[in-house]
Length: 67
Image 1 (tube, rainbow, N blue to C red):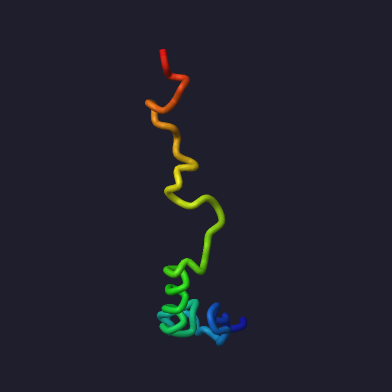
Image 2 (image 1 turned 90 degrees about the horizontal axis):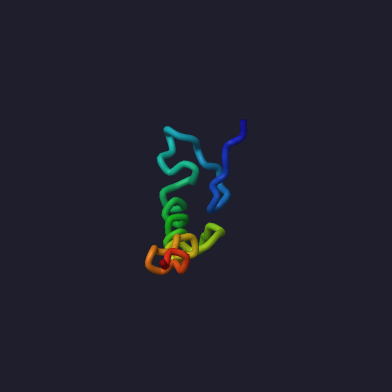
């Protein structure tokens, strides 16, 4: 079985429990990855959360409920 590679730098990443930063090779690479998430360099496809695209209309805004 081959040693997994760090997704940030490509160096071999030791498996757990000996490597607390797994799947990264070091705490440095782990922090670089966190910084990319916080800096919005990584994105999950789909509508932005909180834009109201999937939210149902409030009862007072629906036209079909009027008497």
